[in-house]
Image 1 (tube, rainbow, N blue to C red):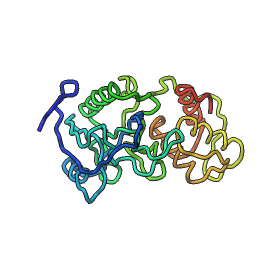
Image 2 (image 1 turned 135 degrees about the vertical axis):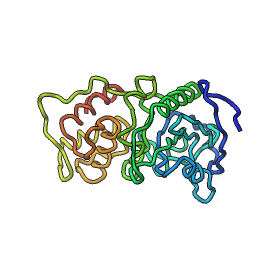
Image 3 (image 1 turned 90 degrees about the vertical axis):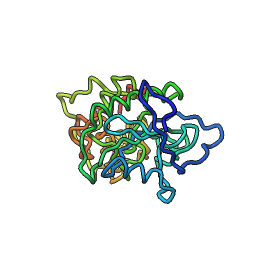
Image 4 (image 1 turned 45 degrees about the horizontal axis):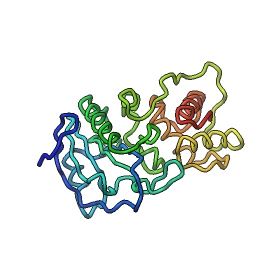
Length: 256
């Protein structure tokens, strides 16, 4: 059943029972992008509407640009799981979740087609018109749950999304000619602490303890999946550090 249109696109109702009330007084201020990670759109929709699965999202976008509405935006959909962003946990409480049909890393990860990206832009703009979502709060599932998730992954066109007015992107983010060194697992001390502080200032849930352990590596990989997609290795090299500084400046967090 089609009840409305988004930028001229039909909205198909596919109601999910997997939602509940948002906490009283909690305003929507975050947009979370996912991929479905399943072999087909129908398989994903069946899971997202299965009461036994206890997962959902507000919207699902097909590779051909089809829009399915699963949960009303006024309700809390169960898409983020254990998560944190900008010092606050339970991202479900204040977010809208969009699932993009894509088989994901386990089933043949592939680029997101232009028709799908165009639909995501139209939908995200419509969501932004309804809710006060800052560019820095347009995030990946991997940004808010870096130890558990990697979606929508390094093939998602974050740069194109930002150029269309959704999210942010450091357009001038090129690797510096002079390298300041590389930090990886096992590193310790003040350089690691500064890196962690920079990542936390952008929004990642990371304690600046000066120890580059698995948690820090997971966050670095999440940052790279979003902003440095050509190399996602969890190592903070000069290019990653330069990108972090520029993203920090864009969000008003200052240099890393």
